[in-house]
Amino acid sequence: MDAETFLPANSGANCREFFAMLCKMLPPSPGDSPDVRAARERSAMDAVVALHPDDAFEARLAVRAVAMDAQCAASLHDAGLAVNDPMEMRRCQAWANSTARHSDAALRTLLRIQATREKQLEKMHPAAMGRAGWWFHEAVVPAPAPEPEPAKAPEPAAPAEAGPAPPLDFASLTPAEQYAVMYPDRARGIRAAGGLPAGYDYGPPDPEILDGLVHGTSPILRELDRTPPGNIVPTRETPPRQTGL
Image 1 (spheres, rainbow, N blue to C red):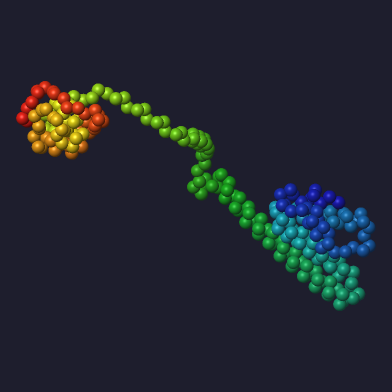
Image 2 (image 1 turned 90 degrees about the horizontal axis):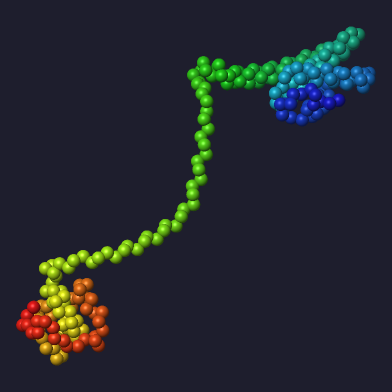
């Protein structure tokens, strides 16, 4: 017998297992033929399906309710046959009452679970949810964000083009710088010698200018150091001889 044709597909359990469970719980019938026994099992399974179990637990409750009801019916049948044996009749009737209570309890539990589920499903109905204050609108799924491009290494900055040198503001220079601009050869020789070079043939500058030429660190004065000291020779520049700057 194919039990999978009886239980619904959403029972969530092995249908053959429930059918075997039901067959073991049904009362024995020693005088029945295999065909009669199969018909009784099929009828009991039809009763289980009629209870509309929705999952594995509800299917177990449905099987228990139907099996206990079958036990009750069999005990009442035996009680009717024991009319000449009051003790056996009372025993069968007591067993019938017990199995009936078990069947009713399983059935009430199953119906209570199903009623709770139906109420929950009714609350999810659009009309019921609308009365409860829910509003339905079209849900727009946002497009996936584009993947960020891999970071690129920063390009090296282009070297700044050297522009023309700004015009020299002679008045803003120090006396030593003014002397170096006017007399570059003299200033270069003084700076290389650390003072007035030997054999100079020009008027010596003021001590302030001489000290600035020797110890100054401005760009104009450091430019004098580019000429090697060996190339320093005494020269005569215009004006040929002065007592000061």
